[in-house]
Image 1 (cartoon, rainbow, N blue to C red):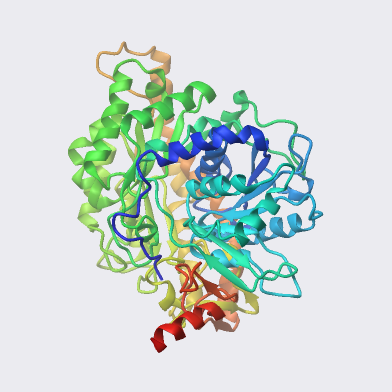
Image 2: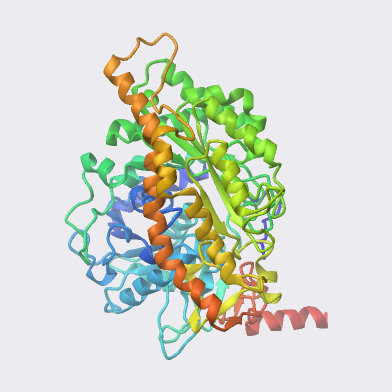
Length: 638
């Protein structure tokens, strides 16, 4: 079920509101002297292709963005803890400024949900007199906020509230809490009073429990769908988020200080960068358009250039990955950004001459931007992750065809940009076909011949918030267990076959491994040493610039020649992890009994909006609270 959208005209925040709320909070932050820990939950069982290495070498944009907003709002005693770097972190051991934090903010994706709940459980062990206010957000809460609360009286616990939106929702919440917080009062105490007074009901993007007894909620109140920041230039400076990162360690608590500026580049050599958000396509398996309420949002070219220059000049970061849903979605906006980056490079900006930029696009939009790819190269773009999905268009049609994909890849190669295809395997796709390129291996071969040096292949998986999510369960496609092993949330990352109508689903699981093995193997590594699929020099070459020294030119040529071979080493390393984790699951699918889910995952706790009506985040099957039923009866009687 897709998230509903707000009424037209009410989907975006008023212009300047995100900046204004930070300004308002700065005027009162010093009086409250809050300490905050922002924890990014991470399950190390998810470390495999196609994300391995990137998952630990690129600090996530979401928690950094929240950290930047907090610091800019005056809450400078904030620390970001990444479980990628700090696997043993426990909130009960965290001390910041010599005391227990006032706020524990946890961000979690669906596949890291178990680690999130472990952190919540650990925080609940803290003496209530000193326990922080536990707020959970991130992708998991955007679509399934009820899962961070508790309905089991035998295992009381759960978060204090969930944020189902972006950083503005959190700042709006803090503004309301600090308005009522008394001198010396805990933030949890202020939250309890504000909740009882109904002061949270007009803050869209929250879900909180009411009638909770010993950690067991009677109802969940859903304040509705968030309003979005329409102008991403209003986001806080990303440098601030980096400066509060907890250093990598095996400790359970916090270090005396954050990572030093000079060590940031070593800890996270790639920086994720918010540039645009939203997608014009409406793929049934994707929740992105509905989440953005069909809005296309972006930073301006000057703001993106400023962010890159500040991050490079402060931390010497050279590699950037745009967190775009589809960077070429709006050609005019994309051209505006690329033109600004190119202009600054031509004007002598050292950062713009050093950066290497990558992001995500589609085949269809790449072909539309064919005439502007030289500009993209001059602007620093060196790789584009392309949503090919299925070249035949059987799964979804986004303008991709065999000929069109080959042409798009050739255009990218000719302009010094590496094409990085992303594919989705599905029940109707065979491993190999003798004539038409419908088979998975056929398409992997075509992509390799077209110049791809990397490959991402995932099994189509039910994604919360998408059009197809409900039917995956009601049609009996989703698995509950296989061979006695339960399907856990860390498996919902596309690497495991856990929803299929195929009579032999283990074949689909082995197909994923076969595609990776076809693409990454020792023979292909040896071939890449002598004849790489694509050679792209990563450094800038600008007209009018003096020729670099001969030794630098030779070094760059050698690096470009052997880059493909290096990607083969990376792929084989990642494949070893993928095989160890997913091959046992293939055996369970082959030899064990598969039990299927017939019910859409939903809250076990009744949900309602603040006025007693249906909750926006409730899915079919969610129990109704007594107030919702009473309101419905009243309407019926009227």
